[in-house]
Amino acid sequence: MNGATPSPFAFLDRPTQAPIVVDAGIGRLWTQDELAATVDALAGQLRTGRRELIFNLCSGGDLASIIGYLSAVRAGHAVAQLDGRLPADLTEALIARYRPAFILHSTDGRTVTQRKGEPGGPPVADDLLVLLSTSGTTGSPKLARLSVGNIESHTEQLIEYLEIDSHERAIQSLPIHFSYGLSVLNTHLGAGATVVLSPHSIIRPDFWADAARWGVTSFAGVPYSYAILERAGLLRNSMPDSLRTLTQSGGRLAPEVLVKLHELMAARGGRLFAMYGQTESTARMSYVPPAALPAKAHCVGIPIPGGRFAISTPDGETFDPEVEGEVIFRGPNVMLGYAEHRDDLARGDDLGGVLRTGDIGVIDADGFLRLTGRAKRIAKLFGLRISLDEIENAASAHGLVAAVDGGDRIVLWRLSGGAPVAAGDLAIELARRFNLKSSAFAVRDLDELPLNGRGKVDYAALAKLHVN
Amino acid sequence: MSREIIIKAFAVALDLPAGTDIEALELGVNPQWDSIGHMALVAELEERFGIALEADDLIAMNTFAASIEILKRYGVAL
Image (cartoon, rainbow over all chains, first blue to last red):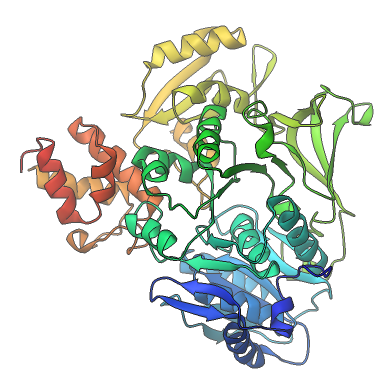
């Protein structure tokens, strides 16, 4: 690191001939100076003499999405990283609302196509760098505003605890319009390391063949990715010897699954990092150090370097152990605030480094945060406040279950076919555990659980199903 | 008959627009048939035919034609 702050963009000023990106689809290895030259060429076309907003419509974690992102930053603009697979009408509505100067997209995943929008729109704050959607692929206009400082300090925080050095090669398994996928890219660019881009889905053996061929050292996945890989036996059978680090974020993984993955990695001298964060914290807030597993598998971990947690109670904030309340996070990676429309891009720092997470939790005596629920995911039954997430966690031993407030009962949606336990038995088990009547639960089977763009259960869609 | 059911399962599980050439689809090539879509498809086929696919078959099921061949081995009559 040579003492310098590991910015993801530093290589653009001082590119070397070190490898930076592998385009595994065509077997091309890009060096830093090659990528910097390509980025500079596009950045030149995007400069207008003032700060603008660029829309980068990403088709995933592909080369064009990366070049678009870096070029927008290199040109001195703010860049909204958006899902390029949104329906066209939703994208056009976002364009009308935010009035970007240029819209970047790609049809082949390698070359960036640009379309002129509306250069010279309302002002963009000097320190605003990245805008990310907080709601997956719904096309919601609500975006998190991330500053240059957010991106650079978060890159440094992650590099520190994940111990990413220039020898690392991450496979870019998540799209870079998600905070998690973008953090994988930023940390590896910042560490002078390499990202490997595979055109294949993680469920195809070709993906793992790419990982083996290019000596990939780490893989990042959301809970659904690990559920798929587990079902297909791919981690156990196809993980290359070079792969030493698995990271997991983007939702809770059942402790049983987490321990299994930890043991799989420990047996081959590797590591599993279970992590917790939100787009509002640039990506991450905490992680479970591998040495703390399996004992702390039910926790989301300790704060990342430079961050800290407090618990909000009616009597104020506390650091006392085993007190339940809303989790408050402080750190240099807390976003500036939200944007709902173009005029918000001129705003300054609304949050002052303090994020109310909306998650309910307790800090244990060892300083590990344990989540007990989500502030808004509470059902009221018989006058009791019942955390739907706790219900889900309790049911997770029997497979993926999504719990929804059904008014007079809790509706448990699960996948048909794969359910190892009868609906009635599940209701009885949960009733016993939570001291309720089994009639408080309605178990419903679905052919598939509706997911949002981040691979998380889409509760809004489930709520509608129940009404119908 | 079963062929029709398989086509229907693909259309439903992968949320395919009308008029999609299902027989030309390939896992990971068509945006609808990504890893999440694949698991939905597996669940749909297992449900419709009352079978449980082995991990290896689940991976090998990467085109419509390959899916047909694999389902035959599970006794799905075509």
